[in-house]
Length: 154
Image 1 (tube, rainbow, N blue to C red):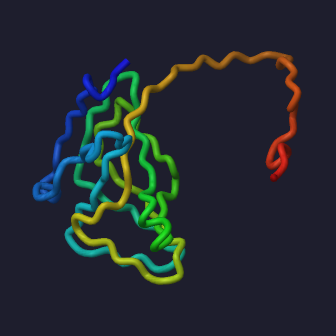
Image 2 (image 1 turned 180 degrees about the vertical axis):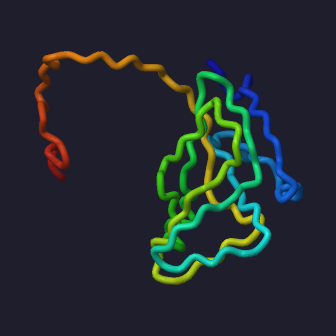
């Protein structure tokens, strides 16, 4: 188990387009996520309800037993309606390609993304391995098959 006194190391390889951008980092003592930035040759203009695949210019090596979770930035979400479409996106420990972020503009106005803009957050989290086994019966629970709001709203 790691803690703030013994963090895991994430190797990062920058593409030339990201050479002037800072590496992701945890910026406060209690931070769980590191900002990911856009690495762009030209600004990207996103119209309302438009999706865009935004390059970070980074390739990362996440250690076995961990994953990278790509999450939206709360400020972009509340102020502009910008969200990570497949949230949270997963970066597997054996992936070595470019980290790219699928953004969507859920706002009412166009949104411009510029080189260096903080566009998402990255959380490194442990992964629990599971083995799936087929069975004819499942153990019963009080909830049973009730889902999609079955627990009520207070």
